[in-house]
Amino acid sequence: MTGERGRGKHGQRPELEQKYGYDVKAAMHALRLLHEGIEFVSRGWVTLPRPEPERSELIAVRRGEWSEDRVIAEANRLLAELGAAIEHSPLPERVDLDAIGGLVTRICLDAWEQWGWSAKRSADSRTGNV
Figure 1 (spheres, one colour):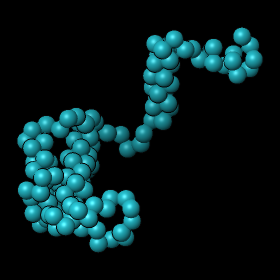
Figure 2 (tube, rainbow, N blue to C red):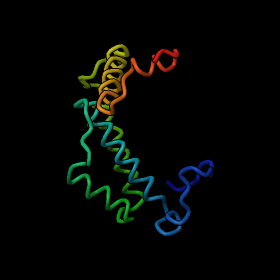
Figure 3 (cartoon, rainbow, N blue to C red):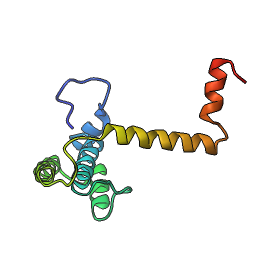
Figure 4 (cartoon, rainbow, N blue to C red):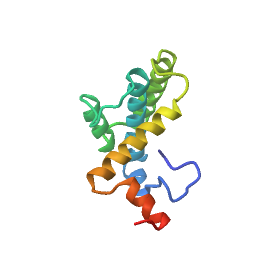
């Protein structure tokens, strides 16, 4: 948030660091991701847009209304909450890659069909069959 580590081109916002003393945009995203992680491992989904009062708090962080110390304290609190949520998560230990692959395939085929494109027609065009 303060640019103290490796000043690369990614994530560097010196204008925010100068104005607020830290990168308020990076701080807001860090807190948002922690909230989303807690929700995901606890429930298996993420609510978008973020619900109140969380949304208003994130906007306040982005506007520079929170001190850097307050952001760090909240991030540490959320990290602890995330750790506890992971311990009690209803999610399976491993991802079912076959199920995910099947779901992605069905979604793509359905979308292509809605666009008037079929997998068979594409395969025929690649093999020269028309």
